[in-house]
Length: 111
Image 1 (tube, one colour):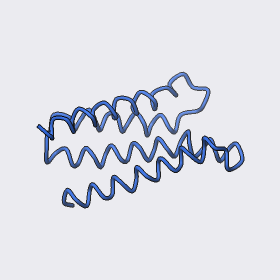
Image 2 (cartoon, rainbow, N blue to C red):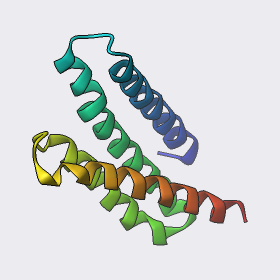
Image 3 (cartoon, rainbow, N blue to C red):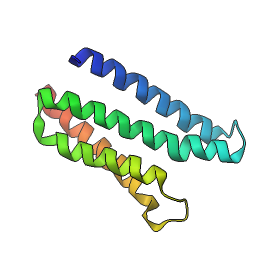
């Protein structure tokens, strides 16, 4: 897949993730569905978005690829952990790490 197609796929996945987060925040559906959308599906979609972005980074700067895969893994694995698990925070850590890597890789791409 070329870079433009990867960007399109990542954009669609990111928009779906934002919709899931917004639906969960505004409590449009019953509690279990809201939690599933904002507490699980959101992180799975973000993880997939990080994976797609990592594939794009192989074309730009390969030093961020594996850390971005790790952040994606934290998001996806964390989304499947029970709510009361102490490791549940790993999905948030994955999200933060992925966002930081994303910004760092974009700033280096522009230089």
